[in-house]
Image (cartoon, rainbow, N blue to C red; front, side, top):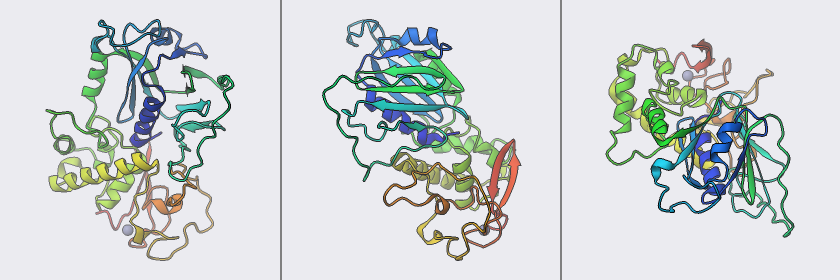
Length: 348
Ligand SMILES: [Zn+2]
């Protein structure tokens, strides 16, 4: 499942591709035909993320591909496409090469989802501009729930957990249930997100490792940021939330803000400090002693200057390998059906 930084990057990519454009919206698979009809021909006016929720705003009364702001299209008329990718959802982009959004489109088509393959940007070869020939969007591949087709680009959504059209009021209701998102700047007048986070953790007796994955407590944290931020805080994931000192949680929040905004900027999750990298970190142990393990593909591997995936984490997917700090084998267990990684010595 993508973590929050990927959803923010998707929101930015969709906004850069389509804002101000009237889109042809369809559901090649058919399951979203009614929703697509509500948005077809409307102009994209906003693209936002909150945690793992993505909201794409379409102006009201744009049914003929006309202007928004025509005197009748107030905020109340904006319709929002709400998407949650869940475990299997992905966006696929393609374009005619004329747009400056090189990180989101190109050939061969790139998928963004669990396996993010969008290069970080700097150093990436630009998408070659094509001739003036009319661009033909590729045929939908797989079960495309919704297709957003603009003049220069197309975005196909497959396999989402949620895909629906909501009003501004309904969007606000979804957001009201979510915890603060470390990547979002709080709106003026909003309560301090850090204090909201601290309060929500400390009012629960659930393990803090479970609370970090609860989107009502903090929005956008997934399994990698959970494991890594708790390690960096030297915090036992199984400690009840109400027993974690507030100052520890404030530092944890600040660390999540820094890590997740860095991930949003680069497209890669890197949590190790430079002195702890190398094959096994400062301890100079082999990265993988002959074991087969699922390769972590969250990182923009191959990006110039990027940190390789096998050096990017302290504990995530490193069960059985020596802790980069103390050398003790990293522990693995299931917690509420999700894999949890931790060091039993460093995190007490
Ligand atoms: Zn350790």
